[in-house]
Image (cartoon, rainbow, N blue to C red; front, top):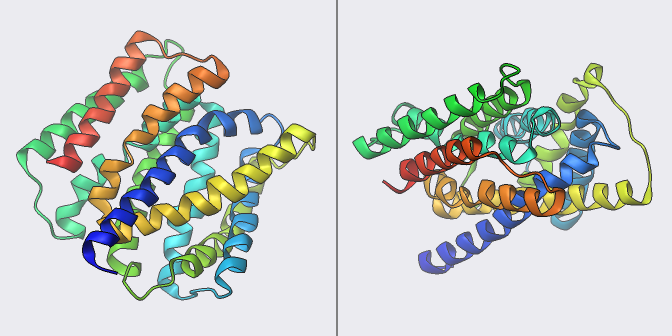
Amino acid sequence: MGPRASRRLGYASLAVTVAVWGTAYPIIDVAERYVSPVALAALRTLVGGAVLAAISRRLVANRRTLVAGFINIGAFLVLLNLSIVLSPNPSLAAVMIYAQPLFTAIATPYVLHRKISGLQYAGVLIGMTGIGVLTAVDSRGLNTGLLLGLLGAVLWSAGTMYFEKYVAGDAIDLVGATAFMSLASTPLVLAFWPLGMYIKLTLESIVMIIYITLVIQAVGWLTWFYGVRSLGGVRAGAFSMVTPVIAIASTALLLGKVLAPTEVAASAAVILGATLVQLA
């Protein structure tokens, strides 16, 4: 496949990713009425990984993909699910999670040995200002869900850079690698068992579990990693900034949860800052 065709396929893959992951936030928020965050994360890694393994018929199992799976999938999913259920609005969890490019930009000169421009540092400042407003806007105090989302952003940034530097390559079987990362991270997710494990089976919960494990987990992660490999972590991160916008819109549409004006302005600052970081 030529470079141009690879880039087109990379953008198409990321378009699927942002559509799936953007609408995931309100869906997961509803699902966690029936399934605990840890149980849902375990189902995502186990079932989603099994589906990908069946498609690939092989696992790319080595130390580097194991580490990438622990960071990008196992620990990240636990933080993501906890952030959604503990945040005042699931779309705010999305905004915090997608502050990821800010941390990637800060670490890129040291990890990937790429220079960061003045405009990118300005983007970091704008984004961090938005984060500061979001964490201070709740009169009841610092929200645990938002802090967990921010920690998830830091972890995802580290995982993305690790994947790009040590795992991504033209010869790698992305389906097999993602399957192994998902399955291998299941024991790590189960280590969070003390935080609570419960599943209430109803028709609605079963449908949501199937969608979350097959589409959000299997399809979402596969298309994301392909986009990173084809376009690089920085460009993929820029494209991914559409996701929190979709999350805000879909949460308002599906759940009727609308952000306050201050939250909208702060979220816009985070998204703008992260986008500037990637496009500069």
